[in-house]
Image 1 (cartoon, rainbow, N blue to C red):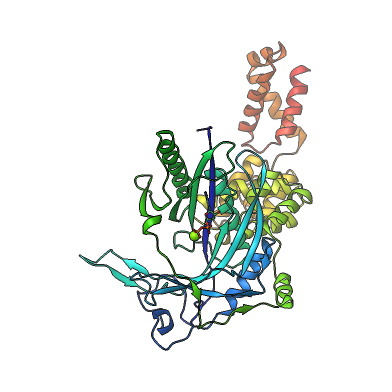
Image 2 (image 1 turned 120 degrees about the horizontal axis):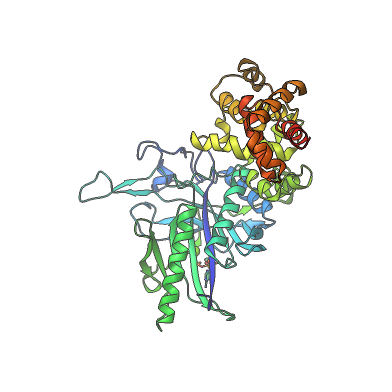
Length: 479
Ligand code: ADP
Ligand code: MG
């Protein structure tokens, strides 16, 4: 395998989160009864005219600015002609020679531990097609045109990716970014975020790219990784057996974990692109771009750097906290409300809280414990009211709706025993009850301290301060 270098470029389709379609007023809401959300424009009736939804222009600009790209001052919609039952007009409106966004870039943390720059060639606006429906139809197919005319931003990368893992890292980065910008809901099950992966291999050291295959319509990160890995292996096997890769479109079958040929270059469509005479070119003025720039939120990379540098959060944790804007907001609100170090708060957000969310299948917006409530719990560990271990039980009770950390600590009598006299008495009792272990400890078996701490904690129902117990035990045992 190492004789070969893998080359990948992704074409990501992000469905733009508008209320209405790209060229009509029909709703884009997901899940409606078939064919209830396709108007005459979406159906391509004669005599109707498309009107561009301004919101998609704003969203594309936002994306372009977020990846440091050029916003094309004059972009043009083109007709991509082909026949398919889910495309009543006989053409898809897209952008071809003059896309709205060009020459952007972003960085990924690569598989090999390095930070890599990945070029974004272009991002263009286009409409989605309808859907063929096979389920529930015998010997025929149904057509649902609700999705026809749904706005898409197609984001095309340079062939800069060098492994399946890098491709996934890049796709995740774009996924995070479009959700931060609020331009796409990122819902992959519903098809709001999907990609085509172009894959080729070449001998290490060769400048020229190998022939590529394009794997269509991958709608999960796991499938992207598996489909690429399968495809790389297929191409390498083929080349090592003296064969040749043919340029073609392939489908990934997740049930069999393999890619299969759909159509080859020879049968590929000639789309006869030409500028759509029904639509004016999109002219974007400098002040419009500046106004959009003002609306950009703090971007994921900047937020991650700030959590690390200003709040002292570990790099890995800052990376996870900033994958989702809402999670980062929750963490920041909790860190702000707490007097404990931000890293301690991060541990709780990524530990107990994320665990509970996962267990109950909830998103951070559905958390049963608020940022302020979590902050109070962390403060009670920080000010030695309870131990970290007991705090986990308190957290579970908070999650179950039993009240605030203070209410639960009070109601269950969980306050740490800080009275030295009381702890000393228990320490004496434990040492007296275990003379054999005490002798062994004194003879040098120091790891027995753990046993003694455990005994004292058991006696106190976990309510003694572990640090204090440790100190007292050492003093008494050696004294
Ligand atoms: P097309 O218009 O035929 O789809 P493009 O030139 O627009 O082709 O490229 C589509 C995608 O394929 C881009 O993401 C690009 O980076 C990628 N790509 C192009 N050539 C190769 C190659 N040899 N190997 C892997 N990916 C490639
Ligand atoms: Mg393409």
